Image (cartoon, rainbow, N blue to C red; front, side, top):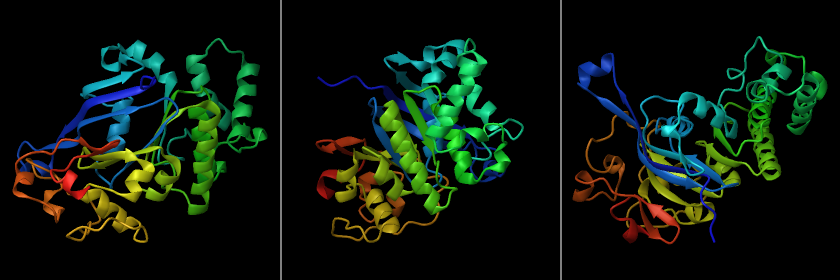
Length: 329
């Protein structure tokens, strides 16, 4: 019997009304940063969320934690719809859901010591904890992420970027959350440090059983960490599959192009047309109708301009949002 999901996201959308110079070129323009996204996350599972810059990955991560206003759709946490909770009830839920941000130094208060930063969640959610017990827990957590406990009274500027990210992870994990959202946690770090942080996250997940939503454009890191992978383009999920299945046989033309562009040594299934080349940045405003990827897709048909392809299970356990998905599979 399958366990119920830890997190169920259903038709979540986040739309922004454009202002300033955008209005002169696109009257009443609306940017669909996240558009009707749905997925489940099981306890202890790691979901990788990939896509090029600007596709809505980080916005989706913040929407899951309800850190943004005007979120449409449902975010169900352990069977409870978070949208129905008041501010105080939602605050209490946050001890079970934590986030690690992209810029390690900017995420830390420069006026607080490392010990104060890591202990902040304890002060918020465990005000009854004695100071000595809190300090011992902080030092144990520091040791767990590879920091020296005697560094507890130092300030963030005294640490390297990789060490600051370890501090951020320690702060997020001190309450043993059930869910950890990692928003590009290694993108600003040197390659040698990236591997250390990834292995640290794997060790912490193994020990605490924490589920992770790992947001990144680094496919090699995502492949190393994830059980399943969500591929996002222009605010929508275009492919969802188990890690090995996705890298071995991607279906959606965008996923194929992404793998071919970033990992050229990886075999990509042959088709009657080569995968399209991807420009450096996503299209700011994709077409309002039909498939958002159609203008960059060598497989596009007339129907692609008329109807948005639904995310459907093309083969068991492998979902794709493409009108030609079964043919391409």
